[in-house]
Amino acid sequence: MALLDRAIVRTLPAVPKPIVRRISERYIAGTRVEDACRVVKRLNGEGKMATVDVLGEEITTPEEARHIGYEYENVFRTFGEQHLDANVSVKLTGLGLKLDHALCREILERLVRQAAERGNFVRIDMEDSSCTDETLQLYRELREAGLGNVGVVLQAYLRRTLEDIESLSDLRPNVRLCKGIYVEPEEIAYQDFDEVRENFGSALDALLAAGSYVGIATHDEWLIEEGGRLVRKHGRSPAEYEFQMLLGVRPERGTRLVGEGHRLRIYVPYGEQWYAYSLRRLQENPKIAGYIAADTISRFLPVRNGRS
Image (cartoon, rainbow, N blue to C red; front, side):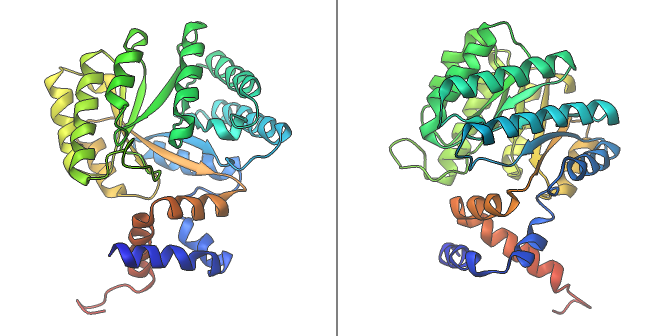
């Protein structure tokens, strides 16, 4: 199956854009803020919260970074006008992290302060391991500047994650905990599926024990059940944690979580760079390409009368 997944990824650049667009429609809200808000409004109607991500990691100039910052300001304004239950996730490379640390800090802090004025929240997303130290440093700088409406992401497959939890413990951080999707070398990241699961559980246990609010970001059924067990172990009420999922992935399981009384937040990406985002995500994790290909085939070729 791994060979098939990689073969699918190699063919993606040759697939016509309209086909990739159709495949991605389930997982990306669209190209405009109006598209994202339409999806968020539907999710809110299903009892689900959202976090919106403006696509645009592939920036090359300060002007492009500032443009993404302005787009997030537009997102906050639109959330308020439409009374949506949503916050935002930002990727620091899209705000200029690889160009100029000071520029990135300036744009990020402005967004967090504007979110605070509107009673909203900013999640700093985590990218590949080349960004980890600077991301955590910027998060600490903002918290030490008195900004409490900002959170960060930790990735369970990184060997350093438990140490990062300990180093952040004085902040009682608001954390999205996920497995991690970037391809990293064995010396810094667990490669074995069960090891990643085990470290996810250990990290979640440590965060809950330290009093952190945690977004349990997973589609893994075993980890969903383990997450439920751990929040019960630590006596957390539904208002003190949440589950998180990606748009279009296991929506029926998300609905069940809501029905069981859990808070659920859906990750909703949108933007003009939907094509680059789609290819990059699939290339970073070929297994996802296999999942999406199987899902797409099942939708285009529905089973009739028990036979294909």
